[in-house]
Image 1 (cartoon, rainbow, N blue to C red):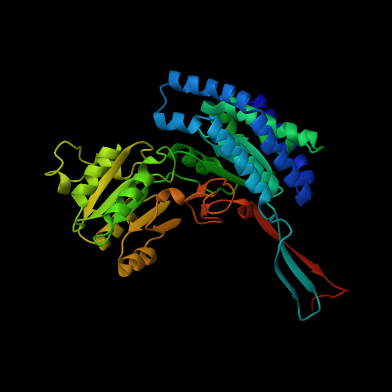
Image 2: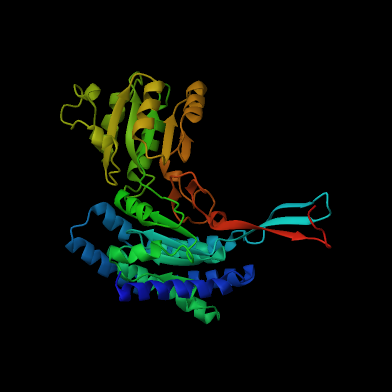
Length: 418
């Protein structure tokens, strides 16, 4: 580690350590005022945000990044308004800090209260999507935490302006601007010393591709909550409704392809009476199908899906299709290929639905609705740090309450333990 690298790490973590002393003590009213000011400022700075975002988009096109990545990068007027609205939603959420989760008087007369408190300093490492900068910073701030944000090089201009907008709002409200910090060094080597700062950073949240998740997990000395890829599966039972199935699958796959809750594998019961009609309609809608051998006679023009395809998060219009003889085969397929993100069943048979829900172990299991609903905003969380595919300490959308821990207060009048 070079001296410059160490100095940079010590500087940014030192700022975080100092800032958290103030941020954790802010009242709910103060935090909400700041967030509402931030929401207003995002709209005021809309043109400047779009200007900086265009720099990232131009670089992305020069580097021939995929259409999915470019879609994730873009901040148009609609998305900026949505970003502002999400900040307002966070300001309207109940503040979890100070909430009593357990209270009692012990037999020895001691009064015990366990309540929620901030985690402290959170390092979030993410790729592509600049909206994460505001979503995470706002959630961390509302829950009394300091966020150290490390976005990808592909969104550097967008991330910097968004972070600076937040910093300026903090200053205007006489709050330390170090309440949110941004790592402007895009070289991966700068991540390693940060991942070793367990004395200051309390939690690391990586959200992105497999390579990023693996890198963080292997190098971190700090607890990690992984927000891994989304290989989402949807099973069409033999007793599913055709129109419902078509609408749900199109929405799951095409409503926005470059996100982790988009559908990647379609599993169809071989006795579903409209299976060919379903694939024909999906093709017409713009889905690029990869089929298994059972469909080959009817769709000779379509490529065959490989085992690697079934493991792949495409993040585009491609959709791998698998034909199965029964629900048990569908469950075996999902257990093998799923990333533990979202699984969907489309069926009118309650026995099939119950078996599906009781057999699988993923962050979310949906019945007769789109996989696209697996989202913090849709779950009423206002926004999310990301969607955790692990099991500790949060699973699924990571929201405001998941950025807290607990402390216990005991009040006595001289009791001693015998």
